[in-house]
Length: 412
Image (cartoon, rainbow, N blue to C red; front, side):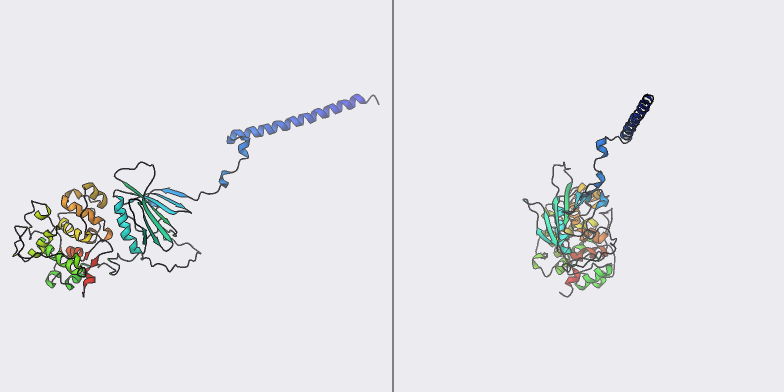
């Protein structure tokens, strides 16, 4: 037995060493694997077992910069030439858009106080010094329009405001959602997007041709048949006569808005329009009402009316706009007219007419310039005006949807 004992010990020693070597190789392989993983991904062992960031709950707020991100309803009126700066949508607050405009916030308020009620929105809160925001409601939807608040530095010549729309299903794209059935809410009757611009709540469409304007004004006695068959250049005396006649006939149901004609015993304000002139009552009446420049309005140089001179575009607007707004014309600068209308030739407009041009902009799509001359980047203030353009202007008096038209006056 003793002969085999050294041999058994030798075999056991070899087996123990092999087992030890196997353990060392296993530890070395694990160490190399961990080292390789750390160098490749740049992560620690703790990072390896960290939660996947892709599994976090999504943020319910989506904020987008740029003018293409407006997600207000397609039929929601937008303040002319305002620029979209930011759109944010949240589950709690609905849609919040931020806009900038060179106009004062009061102009923005006035625009929406006129436009939204025409689309069946009810004014809940009007802006005031203590509460500078406008709140309107339509069915379950609420819109709040307010100047932007915060610590951001604002430019002195730019107004930043927000439109917060909540409680409405916002669809800025006409693409329909498949397999979705909705039940219409019978609480309001929105204005179809394809319908023509309303003149007043009762009138409906604007005429589409010059002959319609001329026909309506002939029916209420502003034009004669001979007048309505021509499209010639209009003189200043003719415009004064037709402007007063159209205004008084169209506003006939409102005696307090009538223009007073001058009597022949009144001292003439213009040297070239004596009291014997057949158009004296209208021309003198406009001067005494302060609607045309004269010595009565403080213009000492306006001693001549030039009754037979052709009427120009800027004169048409200057005499007509005060009868629409029934407010003093605002102070206007050349930059303000350029920024609102975008006219390339704004510098050619007389300073007195600039105020009327700026005020006319606030009348939106019912402004005289838009209705008479259409879309244009050139006002051409000294260009003469024809009969059709005069008819288009004096067919309607008033601010936005609160005006009156010649068509409404037919038969009165």
